[in-house]
Amino acid sequence: MPVKTSIPVKGIPKDALLSRMEAMREKDADWRSGKTWSLVYYAGEEHTGFLKKAHNMFFSENGLSPLAFPSLKTFENEVIAMTARMLGGDEEVSGTMTSGGTESILMAMKAYRQLARATRPSVKEPEILLPVTAHPAFEKAAHYFDLKTVHAPVGNDFKADVRAAKALITDNTIVIVGSAPAYPHGVIDPIPELAAIAEEHKVGFHVDSCLGGFMLPWLNKLGYPVTPFDFSVPGVTSISADIHKYGYAAKGASVVLYRSKELRRRQFFVYSDWPGGIYASPSMTGTRAGGSIAAAWAALNSIGEEGYMRLAESAMKTAKAIMKGIGGIKGLYILGKPDMSVFAFASDTLDIFALGDAMDRRGWRLDRQQFPSSLHMMITAAHEKAAEPFISDLRESVEEVTANPKASTEGTAAMYGMAASLPDRKAVNGFVLDFMDEIFS
Image (cartoon, rainbow, N blue to C red; front, top):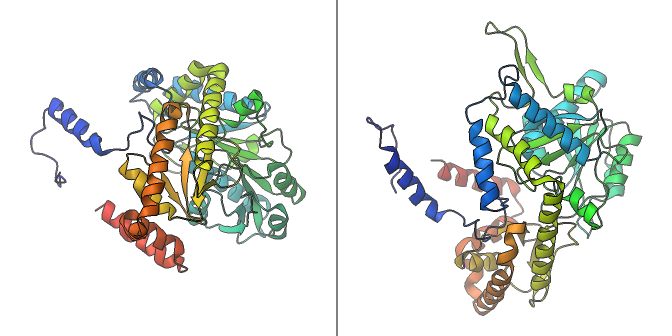
């Protein structure tokens, strides 16, 4: 379909546009049938329809001005309070909503930078100490806010190496990071031990629970073993958690929480010398989508604790069934011991990226990972019906790749294999930038 390069002189009829938009969706990932294992967190059509109604009620409202829209202020404050309580916070814990996990992480890192500037002026090159498995949003924060990232290795269990992390602390360290869980392998870092180190050195400790924040508390209540990770852990000073993941809210909804209002204050931006008036913004964005705030509030209240526990139990049972199925296929194995319904699998006998291509041809969308090369899966309750056909197709795909020695040189397997093996990471970055130029041209 040709790309439009100018606004039409005359408006196109709305029905025709909607028909065209529907046609354009046909090549998108099929998440409703459970064939997509990332990006979408689906709790059924009834819930999705309800979220759309809640979102559309506040479609035009702007969360930038709580004075103009006190309803949004109430929604946001209640979302923050409910999330803080869920994550072990007391009445001193505060925070804001953001547009997603990346913005939540950016805001937390900005707050620690501002705190260091105010209380540790001798720190000229502030450092974030984080495991190599931590989300790239921390790298983005360092890029934007002139911070330095210092990477701690992980052990054979893919969890942060506590002893190595402690040895990497310097006078420039302003915050230590742990994941609950880390996205690549679904394992929780040793949060209590890392937080104790941060407390000992009087630096902040941020828990990135964007992925698990609205899942792990319910698994804990259901009796699954969960490493302590929230504000009940001494030394934890901030947490990020995405409501639009396992909170099953509409996209554009995350929360960043701080143990104190003093730390949250460092997140805010105020400019009082503008001719247009006093400008105050709580987070990175100016305009803030009212619909996302309202839909997050609606999701938490409509699902409730009992609903979240049902969804968590369903997701975990499905994840365990799929992991068992993968483990039963010769040549495949799960990486580490995942703590929740997110995991990756690899192989020492066949090209895992070629296997991903074979699954693509069968309609399944699996994310590719590196170091080590693997395929990634994120399981929700909506994947229950897809578990058996997925394992069946996976067996067929393994047989196909095993029988085709050229599979590694075909499709995206060649590209991913090259990117994972090149020692010159700057060259890989350049390749990806060229790819992005092409996509957005």
